[in-house]
Length: 363
View 1: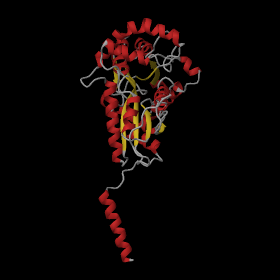
View 2: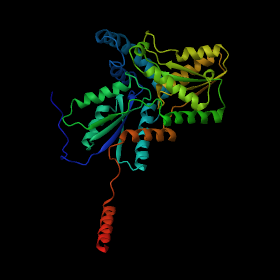
View 3: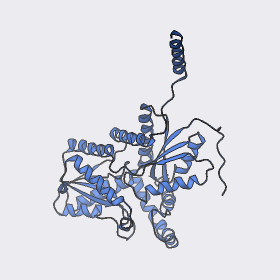
View 4: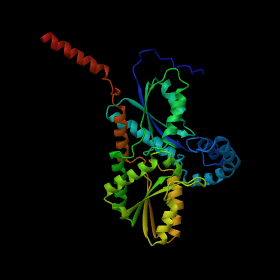
């Protein structure tokens, strides 16, 4: 194997640190062609679909990529903004705010964002950071709950990039933060603010992204971490078990996925006479297609059509200051042991040396 040329930096350079915030990904545009490119990369990841490769290749290219892009493009178009994909917009804002928060705490680090699929890729950002002299990288997936389908796939991308490097930076990874006190507090405060403005619902639905049920039986901790997040959040809100429900959304294919499913659960609530539901998606730190279209449009329609009277979607944490503070705390803990503090300015050092010399002369 041949390795990529190394940047022209001298040996013994001052260590430089970066934080790379990684999210799932998004098409470059809400068009069938762009969505097809995105889905081809996303659904080709064996972490995402654990079906024998040849069989899945035939299904993916023979059926899914012929039918799904046009339908998905219309959904993306319904939530697209002037700035682009909501997921990209919020992830980029989070990275910029995290850079500022860490800077205020005297950490001299570069903060960048990347997407596992599509642009801007993890590989391109790691290349750019290395070219800028970064020698230490903390990788922070935007997924609070660990899953092999998401978190492990981010790590796969980093490790694949590492195989092309002769000189590797030091690497650290945040695997999960599903029970992080700051993350739970930020979620609770966002919900409490909504309730203060709109009152409380009959039921709070916590909808997490689904994964195939077989991953639970094979040892993936995602299911358990989702329920732990839900229990901690309910406790922070003072809710008992009758006041909230955990569900799973975004099924793909005919296999059995984690249950109960979100939309059928909402339909059953509407039919049972539940008048108002509030839905929050704690597994997503940024609003995206799955929250803005699948929940706030499709699930809303399903609940109201089934007899429900009032549906409230509570937005993701996005750029909430409490969340950025929690993200900063989380990053700072994982940066521990790396000297990331800003060095004193030359004039400060000169003044300090002069004062020391003067004190020595007096003695």
